[in-house]
Length: 135
Picture 1 (tube, one colour):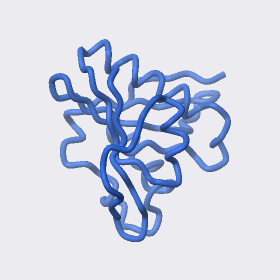
Picture 2 (spheres, rainbow, N blue to C red):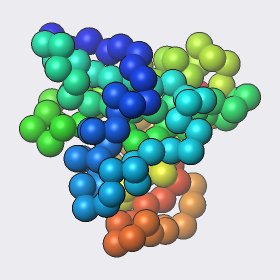
Picture 3 (tube, helix red, strand yellow):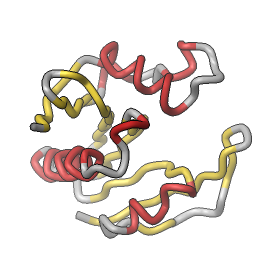
């Protein structure tokens, strides 16, 4: 059974690193304002298998560092986690949710009503675009 729980920024770092940027130094996955965010983990039998971090600034909210263990992808866990973040965003009074999405995950974000609102840009060799939606 999957449960979604609030976690600390430190708990997000191992998954952020191993899934998103395994070739970079560990500190590369830390966000300067991590202490200001809301961090959530998806747990399967008390094992952390996916993480996401939410940052709210008034009506504007952004999620970052969304990562699921490779052996747990495409099983609905990310969907549960993103739905949780969307509900939390509304609860906190924000009306816009956005992220910098890897283009290879664009179809996933479109299923949540998010659309590209920027030109393609690169972080290293990885193509991204800003995806956004109104809540």
